[in-house]
Amino acid sequence: AAYHEWYEKHTPTSKQAAAEANEYIPGGVQHNLALNDPWALSITRAEGAYLHDADGNRYIDFLQAGGPTVLGSNHEAVRAAVLELLEHCGPVTGMLHPSETALAKLIHDFMPAVHKFRMLGSGTEAVMAAIRVARAHTGKQHIIKVGGAYHGWSDQVVFGLRIPGSGPLEAAGIPAPAYSGTSETAPGDLEALRARLTVNAENGGTAAVLLEPVGPESGTHPAPHDFNAAVRELCDEFGTLLVFDEVVTGFRLGMGGAQGYYGVAPDLTVFGKCVAGGYPAAGGVGGREEVMAAFAGGLTAAGQRALTGGTLAANPLSCTAGYHTLLEMDRLDAPAKAGAAGDRLRAGLEGLIAKYELPYVTYNFGSIVHLHTSGVLHLRLDDPEFFDKLTPRLKMLGHMSLAYAAEGVITLAGSRIYTSMADTDEVIDDALAAFERVFAQ
Ligand code: PLP
Image (cartoon, rainbow, N blue to C red):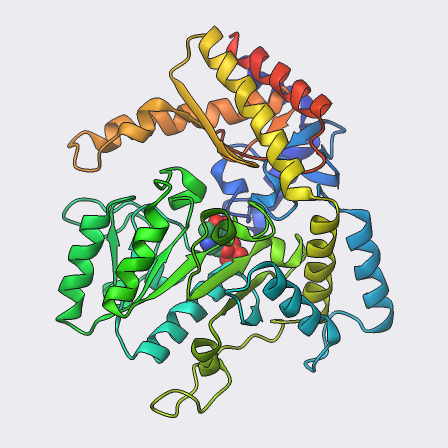
């Protein structure tokens, strides 16, 4: 209650902005991350480790717009490169710009499995393109994803829990045939994956297995360390392409991404976020030359082309921002620094969880830090009281995210944290003090 009171008292401009937005924008807020919270903050300045709202409150930014800003917000060298481009070229021409090749070559240098790269408008589009080109290349029909993974909002990878005996939770407006070629297996379950590949082999075959290498939802259900290598072998056995969704892990986990971290080369890699350094539009797909050839036209067995497009896809602005972001991240060793901040934060949270005997669990993959109520991880979908148990927990996470914000820390839905290079020891210690003020209550 004290924290709801804080929101009422200390964020009048945000409250007014949200009320005005609600007049013209469905739901009042538009970004899907902002939709996670039952309250809205109007952020008017972002810099390094901090966000500032319209009422002058300052927050440590552990949301990081969902992950692209490993250098910290509004990094100066990237901004300078973008401003110079805008001065001479503007954001888009529809023709070739040198930054496109520079970005594709740099990605290949960091991730040798990405021979060829196609820049697109978003991670969602990149997943759509990967699925399309996998089907074009293999001539097979089915796609398998890991249950609980978010791969963007396109029809065929619809996000959400499958309600027993019904469709996915977030499938309103999507006709069932649109996702009938997609199946899900439980996180980390190799036997279920083999069984699904075997069933599919009798019925059109599997074009691709699509997964987040750290486990669904940035590792909310962490993948066992040898899982990716085992899936690689299964894909080879069944003549199926392995697609890594590195929208979050790409460059955040290291310049070699999760594929470098696990030492497993996928056939295709999906990019987003860091690939344009937090500038629009951020998406891309890359991989083996002979697979990627289908994008070029006339090169599949059937002589067809897998169409991709986008008026603003591969624009000079996003390619320039992406190129300079990756250069800077490498030069400054940003993934390692952000990862060290994540380690420090997780260790501190572990101490607080023990001190206050909280029903929480925390763990991290470098700069991707999880802070979950232990019960959510153990809820089973086939539990008849699933929603009765889930709803109060989600409500509680909503309260927690507001409490953290009131104490000066913005998280992703109160349960996930992205750290950046800008999170010095001092920033992390301040954040831990804020978490402690909440936990103490
Ligand atoms: N894949 C993963 C793993 C993601 O986390 C996201 C977005 O958060 C997407 C795909 C979709 O990317 P975008 O939001 O750029 O469409």
